[in-house]
Image 1 (tube, one colour):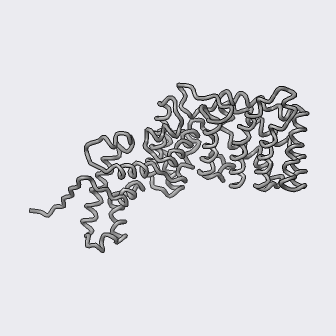
Image 2: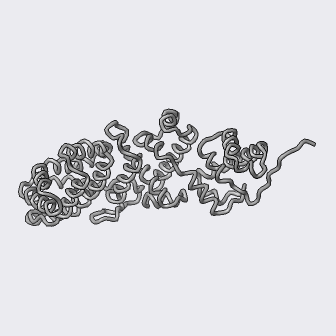
Length: 371
């Protein structure tokens, strides 16, 4: 009788190191050679044949489980193999982890079959295997499709509920879905300095403050039929009224004086003078961006507008990151002190202004620091 290798495991033993090799997109042969070269098994007496057979057995298991990993809610219910709950959690989390460099290349692009076929360029540029790039692409599309089909609830909670992901990873996927939903343009050359973390940081701020169901002052709440990725349309419409901050001379002068006093108190006279000279130009650009967000095209170009109309202007003025932070902080902190708003019965604009500028402040400061 010929020698044969038999592996029997119940409950199923999962080698997470082999699992990582599988997730990286290595073939069975490549994974086996990696384990042999590593030497950790060889020193315990495992032959090359045993290592190769063990690797092949694990790959067979992972290929069988992949269908359930794509539908995490059924992984714990399947009866093909018995896997401890803590190992199931690890398998799911690692399956949905991604390379930030890969996702950065995918942001702003349609999640189409054609785009999936063109992942060779992404693989070459990032050094991540094509198989791994495809897994990451398919995971994003899977989460995106699930969000589209789910009505009500916040993005993060919906993702956690349907994919059993830990909070940080669910937040990252929420940002990715949000960016894909609104087709934010992030691939232009002028935006190449932004990392995935920069863009996801800004997206999370918008989700938490500008979308339906945002738990902020002035939020209008989420209606049934909305997924949680939609902007608060009432808020976007109200942003057009903020132009009074740059069109009403009395309001402009009073607000500018308050801001200049604030920055001089915390900064320098030279910076206060620069703010005084450029206050209206920067504020007009900022509020024009806000007024345009009611149109989907303007939403799509938000990162470009922040860069071209605000960040580049501040750079020309040679403002430091701290100076930019101080300017935006002063805009918000002094807004409620503008008495001209009360005289014009425009106090309702204060929470809208604060809601808008606060997010702009944090996004632009983060982007400015990275530029």
